[in-house]
Image 1 (cartoon, one colour):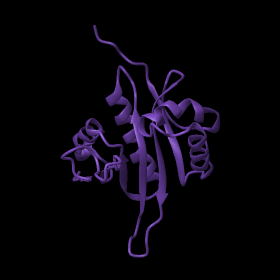
Image 2 (image 1 turned 45 degrees about the horizontal axis):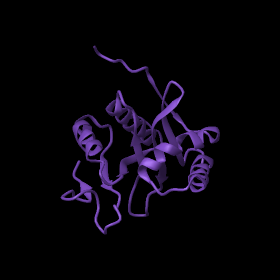
Image 3 (image 1 turned 90 degrees about the vertical axis):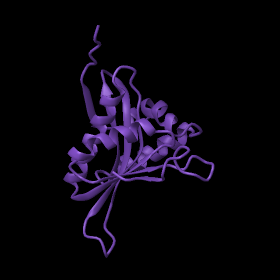
Length: 167
């Protein structure tokens, strides 16, 4: 029997739903107090287009999210960079679908903002997500650079993983 998940909606998170997204953010930052998450998400949401929190909704529940900032170019660079962090997908039925939908949304938002590339920071231990991203790079609309967040032991990523994946 095949289980078909209901459709996803990828939308900017609004202030009313910051607390609802907190359990997902705890997957990325286990020690993060809810007050800090509320303040951080509130600042990103207030940036109105230059930064934000994007959520993947299925029915009335957040199944994935990422935070982003648009980085203006340095004097020697010509285009902006879309910096995505805190990427998480939690869905028992369709985790890959959630992740791919979030990545597709990143690409669309980056293009809308005139960005030349996406710089993505994944939590340590996100090998499954990095493998998924490697699989789509041939069809990506922009270059995607993936970095693992420091896991607290002075290294980056999991044992044997490079800090930056060549994608």
